[in-house]
Length: 252
Length: 320
Image 1 (tube, rainbow over the protein chains, first blue to last red):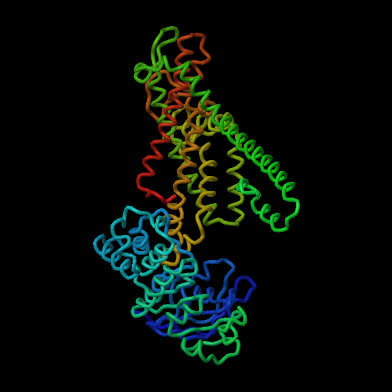
Image 2: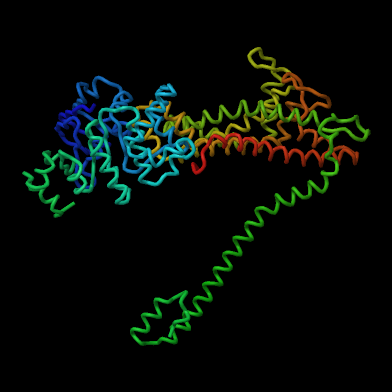
């Protein structure tokens, strides 16, 4: 089951560049939350702070508190533990090129020392079904490389790979921006399915996408969060002028 | 007008039709230009083909010449007999083939792990550090050390030194020969490993880290595995290069006219045996030297192909 995320006074830097400034935000459990905003506004940095991927860059720095469920992820846990609880899907599909479809999905478990064959089989099947890829690949799970799939299939494979470690939160950093419309709508259907089981945070450039999949939407601008409210409110009656300008296409 | 010149410059002809100006003049200019273009195209293609031929030709010439001079002496005896005493006809290089295999085994056991380990350090853990720059510089210098110098160095360090800490030290030995070849392999293996690891996309590393995989595990199981075809190629290059080395063996493995598989004693090697026979005054031994050269090349090709085959069986199609 998903858990909520509580962000308090989050600040992040790349070198001397202050990319996130005083973010305060409560992301509800078992819902999809969309983050919108122009390029370079800090959305991606924000989600990377939620699984401590931000700090894998040597010049990056972060302050503030992020609580996922009842755990303060910067005080009470190691990065690897957090990343097992918080899965991530990237902008470009990035399956492990030398691994079969099966091994791609099982990678997170195998690399963390989990080796029960039978339950691995079950987990792989369940994850691929959850990511709506099972029917397309079930016949050559171990024969085909993950890299031999189409772009849209690869992205669903990456979602299956993230789901296989049974996370509570799923972060998606523009998961459909490199995909064609058909694959995009498949990913969106999937997000719709998955949000009953996981807390989903999705960064997107596509405002229609945010409106379609998310209950809550946050608008980021220049490293600050301008507005966070129900998606309906953001897109019909935003309280901030800048949000209105952005969603009506006046800038960005 | 212009209906028959579809290929090049069709756009300009249409424009001319619209303005109605200078149609025929431009058209003949186009014809000339397209002729020049196809001439240049032909010349460039020709140069590329010529270069390809020039690249492949030396190998083909060497191979054909070796077959011409050596093939007649390659027979069963060559692979089963040891060298006959001077002046006696017949004999083979069986002991030298075994010796080369042992020497290369020792060399790979030393050069491959150290080289790959160094490459992983340079690409993954030591990035930008002073130590990494020093290691990289040292590897490049080591790569430039002439092989005879390597032989002399090992002669001084292992063959001439009696040390309880050095195995097989104090006399000529197969081990010292393997060590000399192994050290020669290190820089090639190290630098290709580093280059190949750097080519693994950042996204693949991030994917592993985002799954909660620790950094060292991600490096070993994901990055190195993704780069493994290139790393294997690097190892094979290093292997093939030292397989034909004679100079480092002169003062270390020394050569041996009899069967020996002990790491502690002098051992025969194909390049050494070829060298000895090529210098001899007897025609029969000259023929054996040619045969030895041919067999050496064929064996290297076989060994490299075998390693490629074995290591590529597990890797899936379409992965690279």
